[in-house]
Every structure is written in C-alpha cells, then in structure tokens.
Amino acid sequence: MTDITGTSTVGRASSEDANAYAPGSGGPLTPLTGVSAAQWRALSTRAAEPNGYYLPEWELAVNASARGRGDTDALGAWREPSTLIGLMPVISMWRAYRIPLPALVGADPYGTLCTPLLDRDMAEEAVTGILQHAQQAGAHALIFRATSLEGAAMKAFADVLGRDGMAPLVLQSHVRACLDATCDADEMLRDALGAKKLKELRRQRNRLAEHGAVNFDVARTPADVAAAIETFLMLEASGWKGQRGTALSQDDGDASFIRRATPALAETGQCEIVTLRAGETPVAAAIVLRHQDRAFYFKLGVDERFAKSSPGVQLTLELTRYLCADPAIRLVDSTAAPDHPMINPIWRGRLAIGDVLIPLRRGDPVVLLIRAALGLRGAIREPLRRIVHSVRARQEKS
Image (cartoon, rainbow, N blue to C red; front, side, top):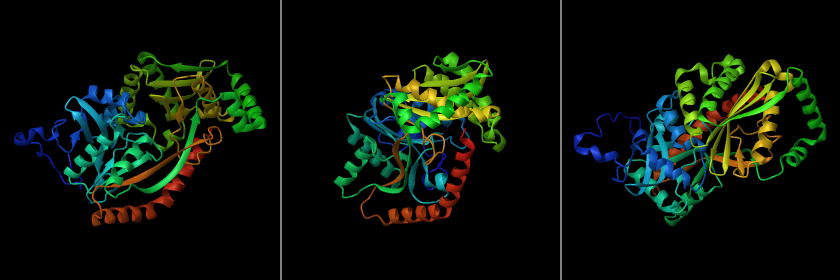
C-alpha cells in the first residue's frame, strides 16, 4: 500500500495501530477488501444516486484482478460501526496521474462513472465523514473522475462545502448519451432516427436474417450469465479490440474480473448479458448492469463479418425496446465517450459528466498547486485523448 503521495506505507497498520483501518474507528483509509461486503451492499440499496460500477460485487472483482486497478483503498463514513453511510474507492494522485501531490482520486472501476455512494437519508453526514477521513489521511483535495455533475451526490458535496465557504471545482466536463426508459421506445426511435434511417436499418436486419432467424436473448441467471459472458468475450476479441490487444479476454486479470463480477451481480438481478443471434450465430453481445432504477450499458462486442448489417446498432435497438418496456428502469447511462457516433443518434438524452476537484481546506495554496498541475497535464494530454477517443468511436460504429 502507498500513501497519497505514492510513498510506501507497508507496515503502517502494525500491531500497535491495528485498528487504524477498522470501520467506524476513525481510521482515515480502509483497504477496499476490509470494507464489510454486507454493509456495502446495504448502502448500495440506500444510495442517493446509483452507480453500478461501485457495487461491491463489481468493484471488489475489479480490485482483485483487473489490470492496474488493484490495491485500492476506500474513504468510508459510518453512522456507527455496523452502518456504512458513505463510500468512495480511492487511490493516490501519484498513482492516478503520476503527480506527487497530496490528493486522493476516485478509483477507476473499469467503467466511466466514479460517483460515490452516499446514504440518501444521511447524505450530508456521509459527505462530512468522507471529507474528515480524507483530511486525516493527509489529503488536501479529493478528485472525482467521471462523476455525475447534476446528481444527488454532487449536490450533497456542494452543500457541505458551501457551509465553509468552499465549492467543488469542475476541471473538465462533457455530456454523454442516455436513454429515458420511461418513454415509448418505438416513438422515441422514430423521433431520433427518422423514417429513412429506420427503413435502412430494417433492410439491414433483413439481410442479417438471411443467415437465420434474428433473435434477441437476455441472460439473467448466474449460470446463463456465466455462459453468455464467454460469447461476449469471444465477440469482443474477434474485432478491432482484439487486433489492438485491449479485449478483456486478452489479459488474464481482466478476464478473471469480468467472469467473477457478472455472475455475482446476476445473483442479485443486477447484471444481464444481451445477445443478438442470426440463427445459431451470435453477431453482437453486451453487458448491462442495473442499480436501483438505472441501467448501465457497459461494453459491446460484435462479429465484424456482419458489419454491413450493423449488428451493434441492431442490438442497441432491441436493448432500447427491452429496457423501455421494463418499469423498474427509468434511465439508462450509455457510459460511452462523448459524441459517440453509434449511440448518440439513437439515445438523445444527455448526462453531464466531469472531473471535479473537492478542496478540503479553505484558502489552501496546495489546492491551487494541485489544480495547476492538473491543468498543465490536461493541456498536454487532452488533444491526444480526443484524437484517440475519436478513432476508437469510429471503430466501434457498427
């Protein structure tokens, strides 16, 4: 384990301070594996704002084996030792950005959403506890990456900071596609795509049907999900991600994480794998997470031999109809890159997402230094990042 500047802290929790990380003891940081899974799960059911990527079954699987995402700590807040009311997985600023300054950064959960979990009935109390523990850990700031800017969690942080004359600072922001699942799917698709595009998509679906009847399957049970994840991994690795070496199955740790997380979440009805088939041939598959009344469209894999039939788009149309027909789901987060050429024209709703700096001390010059360092880093990296995202999005358009 390392401290917030990247310095080794092996031996920090020695026999004389063995309670330093005990939940409810006032210890500033808790190893993620030291958080009670039962308490974490209970908190997720009471969360003020959903985040499928910070569910315990998902994040603990990420922490256990996903490439470069292990050894994560947590900032927690407890009402009492048995009641977890706030949780934010974190890593040091050094580990996140290679910047040796005293800040803690939201851990990457292998999904583009790092909104912390806060108890809806005690959100401000949870925020206060998280901020206090961050200060005790030596941090001068918290940095939330890829966080919902207009949700209940950020409002709670803004309200607590406002009492001390401070405010969150948005470092960068964008909007990404989402689906209002309370609408009529066919009406929404007609409005979004228009008659001409829908006619073209029907023609492509008919071309796909030449290979066999087109079926949309949903794997829900742990056993079915465990089988379907192998189909997904095969499809993902068969395309451009496999050629680039970034498919999940191409890294043993990543493959282990997804094989562990998806059936575990299926146990609680929080993960489904949807597959589009032409006859017996799977042509597209995707992973969908659920948390409260929200769904998260995680990853898509397609068989590029059927590219002329747009299998990824065809699957997304079926998924749209499926989720809009489900009264338990009100919103679907695409978790896609901004301006994604496949999902943006279909799902016309938009979510504001950004990186946010949370100061911990008013008038702290170190916070100014942290902000300046991140600004310089962004000025250097952002143009390249946009080019890479643009190229990847074009590759994913199918």
